[in-house]
Image (cartoon, rainbow, N blue to C red; front, side, top):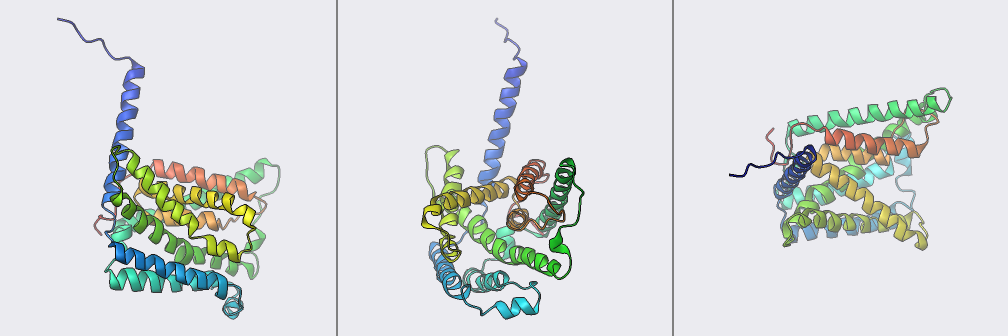
Length: 301
């Protein structure tokens, strides 16, 4: 009787890695399958609401001085971005998804434990980013000083920019494109290769994420020749947020990553913005990889 040859260390490592990838793939599929079930008509109504209001906001509201008095009166704490995104949240999310569809926050983002874990991880992410930024400045031979944006009345504007992301822009987009659209696209896809299904779901949903930014880029005056590269950048960012969401299962954490990428709120003066972004992405990957207990929208409170 022939005896089996003992597997080599390389063979055992390859099998372990393959098993880990298979386990991660199954976990991603479970998370996508457990996402909120939004009927097609309701989803269409939600995005029609979003498109209509987005066009009105970017082509009418932002070019006008309507919201400037609010920003001046609050010294930037309540910005036009926050106001218009609160309107989007109230009408499209609150009106269409919540009242018409009965969708709750926990259906999209999980229970209170998931929220606490996500919020704590975002805070850790920000602290690590500040430490890396300070180290970068120090290694360049410069003194680590407080960013001038935080001095005087400017501090309110910095807080306002962060608030506009956490309670406005990033919050709306995470609910729409990662919390609702991504699992909906996944469930609609059919393929003979199961591993391809999550990849296609991410690609299709985040392509829409990029396209829905066109009205804002028109308002911003982006030259037509720059649109392809900008859409590619937005697709890459959307895909990053989708991967973070699928890896951690926490919409709260993904929301924080999104908000910090849009508004790093750096305490360190003189730190290059590109290095802050790289640090943010790197620590996002690290925190996501070290994530402990799996979370999903089906978590209990």
